[in-house]
Image (cartoon, rainbow, N blue to C red; front, side):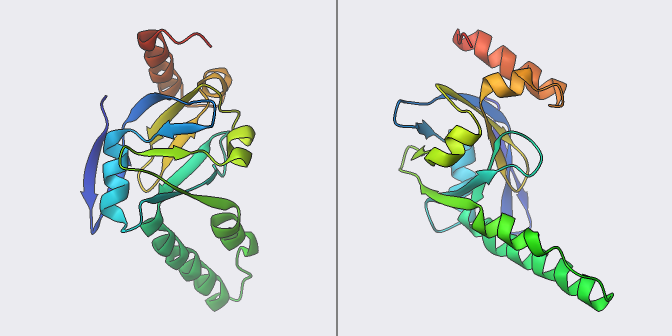
Length: 168
């Protein structure tokens, strides 16, 4: 699987893609290289997961990213206040209130939180895609049917489904 890492300051970023099976209880394994990045970026063996802000998929990151994310939002609020403008009151709610923490084991297996699994319409398969500070988790059916999704991302997902003999 062509997943890799890239060092950025003191943090590594999530890169690459993979198609993973999801069991009946909603357990799925984070691809090994993505898991390794999450482990190096945080002392906690857990990910933070929620809906993507724009796309019909999940967005996940290591626990260490939460502090950096908070600092970035706080700086934007301070800049807005310095300019006499109102900040985005929903930014912190979306970033920290509309998420769940999901612990993962040594092999990277975690249970997709049921609300988010249902909302993203993830069934028997999950397509993982690195997105820098975060990674996305898609239902392959949703990705392939989304006319607004990146065509190359859809092409990769379709290829992996064919390679694994996955019928959607």
